[in-house]
Each structure stands twice: as structure tokens, then as C-alpha cells.
Amino acid sequence: SAINSQEQNIITIEDPIEYQLPGVGQIQVNAKIDLTFAQGLRSILRQDPDVIMVGEIRDGETAKIAVQAALTGHLVFSTLHTNDSAGALARLVEMGVEPFLAASALVGVLAQRLVRTVCPHCRKSYQPDEQSLAELFEGTEAPKQATFYRGRGCSHCMQVGYLGRTGLYELLEVTDSIRHLITSNADAATIRQLAVKTGLRTLRQAGLVKVLAGQTTVEEILRVTQEEV
Image 1 (tube, rainbow, N blue to C red):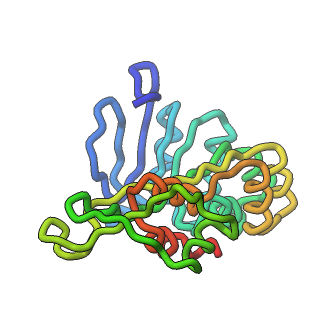
Image 2: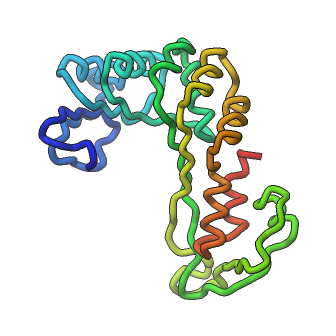
């Protein structure tokens, strides 16, 4: 909504279109008429867009067109399937985008995960085991005043102990130092290491905040973020 205004020509290519967005031109991928993400993106570029949203980058052709669109002054949003934010940077290069082009085009990457939230109807405090706490707090001591919660299971949550979900978010800003690594064809682990040193809050760290707020459990965060280890 922050960028959706009458002055902005916003066009999307999606598969499928899940929500109708007022003021936004939306195109549905249709394999029967060879309307792929790549073909749809080419069509969008002929319509003088200000903002483009590509539902998913599935192949190298789409990736290259999206990057070129960004380099020619368009604001481009899209998604990739990777474990974390740094993985998305490396994935674009793996898909055939030249490292110097990816470095020039990218502004930021937002990784997200959904975690289950503790059922408020049967929530009770508990003490997680020391090994789990050490893993979540990454070797540092948990705050002595911290209280941890989990659900016992009830009719509201069908005896699961969780009810609903909340999001974890990891925002990697593509700074000059990150761009240098991308241009140097660095792997995701190296990019991630530098990002953490310069202030990246990881998915696991975002999960720790949710645990300390009583919204979810230690075990749930460790389960969802295990790829980070």
C-alpha cells in the first residue's frame, strides 16, 4: 500500500493470482498459451511500468530479465526458494545472472518463515532443557528472569498446544561490502557471515525474540531454523 498510488503503474505476473489488488494490473501465468513468467515479464516491460512484481523466479531466463528490469530503473519485487536471505543472492548467480549485474541490481532480500504460536487457552510456563537453550541462545546464557511457555493441549488447539502462526523475518541489506562479495562470486555462507557481522538479525535471532515474548516455544524455533546450523 505504501507504493500503490495513482501515479504509479504497478503490474504483476503471478501463478496463481490469489488476491485482487485495486489499482494494480495483474497477469496470470498460463502455460496453455505459453504465457510463462519470462514471457509475461517481457510483456510487462512494454507497458512502461514503474513497479513490477514477479510471483516467483523459477528459471534463469526470468532471473536475467528481472535483473535487467531493475537495472533500467524499475522497482522489481520477486521471490526465490532458498533457506535464508544470503542464499537468495547466491541462487541468482547459480541461475546464470552475472555476479556484477546481480550486485548492481539488488537492494535487499527478506527471508521469512512461519512458526506456530502457543495456544493462549492452555499456555503454561515450563523449563526447556539446557541443550535446547544453549542451541537457541548460541552459547550465551539465557536471561535469569526469562519465562518460557508452551501449550498443554486443549480442545481449542485440538490437543496440539499450538494455535495460529506468526512470522519470522530476516532482512539483508545489500551494502557495498555485500556487493563486493557477490561480484567476487562468494558463496552464501561467506555472504551470510559478513552480513551477521554487520548487524543482520537472523531468522533464529528473530525467533528468540518471539520465544522471550511468550509467543512460541524454544523447540518450535529450533525446528524451523535448523537449516541455519
